[in-house]
Image (cartoon, rainbow, N blue to C red):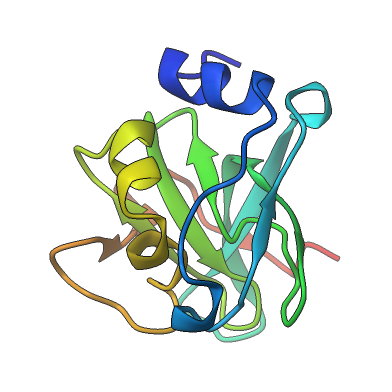
Length: 140
């Protein structure tokens, strides 16, 4: 899956991110076990609402969460070689350009909370139009 070394080391050690769980919308987000990592996909809605979408390869890094669907609260995008967070309700993908897992580890609350409280200095909305082909229909 061509994952960054600092992420591999972190997940193999079975550590959790250290932050004030009350400071982020989803509360405590448990990290996935290294052995459970797999390539999946996230979707971004296209220009025809409910009729078109983009499919982006992604690796889910979050295992459980008390208040929200944990999938892709933190993720790695292998094609873009960057981390992100995917809003499963609104199909918005925020990415963290030029950020390493070490950066996320040092300040996890900022990254975890990006989809609920976006900050330009942390991440940006990912626009797939130049790298991915729009698909017609709906993925499920």
